[in-house]
Length: 417
Image (cartoon, rainbow, N blue to C red; front, side, top):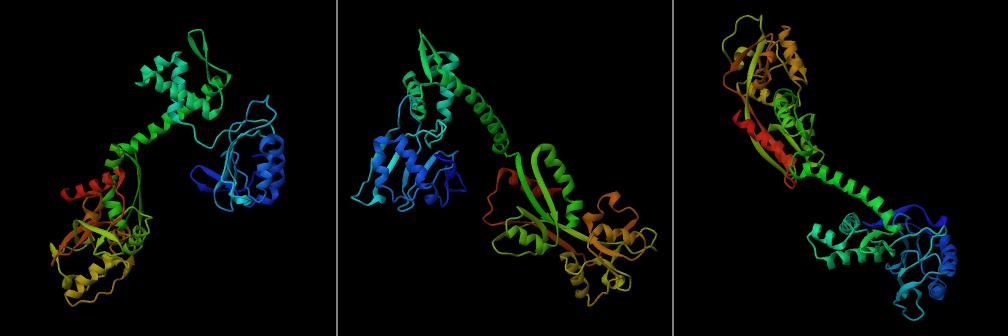
């Protein structure tokens, strides 16, 4: 801040402080020269404190230095004093423990920037004080502003005084019986109007979150549920909550569950059983399986058993999918080990192959529930029946935001559909 060399790579040491690293040697002399020039009354204090390892502050944070020897703050930059003065003044010095330089703590200082720009204290401006200031100027009196704010006039006066003390500037002056801003006050008013606009925009953007209708929710599921179960649900959510962004990704159950565990997905809709570290698993709905054939295939019984199907060419899901495991188990319970002619990763691809007369398949009923989804196909029940349970999976420690709650409620509503 005091010299070009003093501005460098920064790191954060707390929310409102950022300091540059490893500049003690590079900036020691510029700091000392500036101190002698602008803080002559206290220069000896800095000479005695020559062993301090000072680091320059980020210009935007207005921080001059930090005592890296003992971790305590050395200097906070305050307001540059009136230009008519020849030098700055030290506000407070304490902790001088004998000749130990690390014991000297300069708590706050006033100093000029080399270009005579004014820099102010590290504390952030109070938005309430700025709002009070703008009302005093707008109404031309403390009493009118106090009435508008439902405060006492002394309370308004205190806020203005605190703001002026923080900035070390007079912001308001009296002209007769009326209040008007000083030149500095007029400058501040220009910024206050922009600050008010930004705050208003922020509150407006946040209001939708407060109402639980905004935010992003990431869902992982299988391709079948993604195509045949989620679209109407997502459409309803979009119509009700325009700012709710629901993102869907598909994959095998193991991959999806891992993403939930790693918090890359908010929730999963998968075939049960499912397991994983620290997961909360809730059964949602049952989805039965059916056998499908090409519509021009020879007439088949209304219900198909493993024995009736075993000699026919089977087009089935890929080997590692949870649906394939259920189908294989259904055949094994009847003592049959099937050899598929095709193994595909998409239920839509399977349906196309079956419709083309290349074999039969066993698929979730939801994939052929709508008339346009079973075009070119004939659908038959299975005996014994086979079904899968779809469940909702979240991390046990997952915070349920209002946006996520809307999605979960919509999924729960599928139970009655």
